[in-house]
Length: 391
Image 1 (cartoon, rainbow, N blue to C red):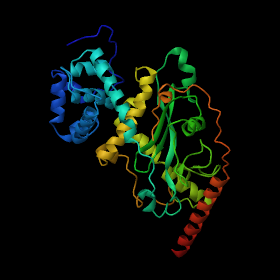
Image 2: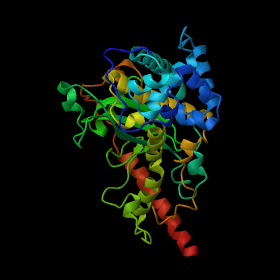
Image 3: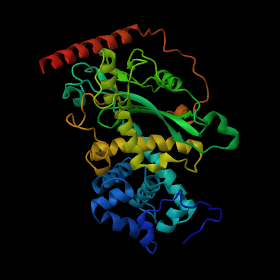
Image 4: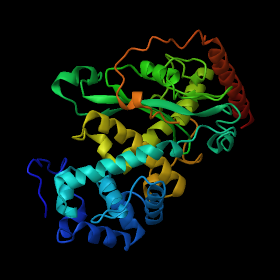
């Protein structure tokens, strides 16, 4: 086996995939063949997607000329190396032991696949359509009140590794090194839009401002809106919950009787907006490399977030009912009681924004959005009271 003199990586964290325990005698291609010739569940376990989805992605990347077979490593093995790393949160040393290549070889193919996925990532992000999402239209708690809602926007902190001199701006409010990633999510666990690369110290509102004012911006269809939480402003295209009113499920204990239209609005707003939690949860479950800072250059760490979201969307499109997605499907209406609770990949994003955008949300006044929220809450409450009286 080839060795790299400066290879210092070990297994990242304490997780060792079971494949490493009994396949060390196999070389990389034999291991990949064994997985791909086995049950589809084994491919999902190792490469984070079913076999047909894996093979189709290989065909896409080869057909577009983004990856090619080499004398030593076929495209299937190149993709397997990349997916094995991000799907098991491993450092290079652990992958070397399994695939029997040098650290330089592993690193080179990892970056080749990452760049190939970035090159087609836009194809896997679709803006909201014109139809009412079925998650709204088929649920009387949400329809017709939220008929113009297209999804939810939220941000998460993704751990990041940077040099000592760069750490200040990347420390979030909890003192942890991270990048602040904004995403617009649909109600069917897909990403409409992702913006990565902002420092952890950047406010959520500032990151949203960036997403709305940059060249490849987050676009909200005319007359439609996203749901946001109170980290953001209630403004044109974005509706936040009422301040000073119970909001999440913990604030609506079992048996609690709703007091007014604002409480009812907040309760249902929360039930819809938690699609972001489920989408992020499914993303991190599939690609746990996003849960701890990987030892790569900052630019690579930013690309990894975008690529992971793109692959998430691709898999959701090709195999929407795979085991990992099933874990984060929304509960049915019977299981949730009423009383309970496009992508930015331009170079500026990849280079991590460090400038302060002064563009305000324009002269856009929030009055229309506030009036819309009040009208939704009022209509919802009137129907709620009428239905209670009819019981």
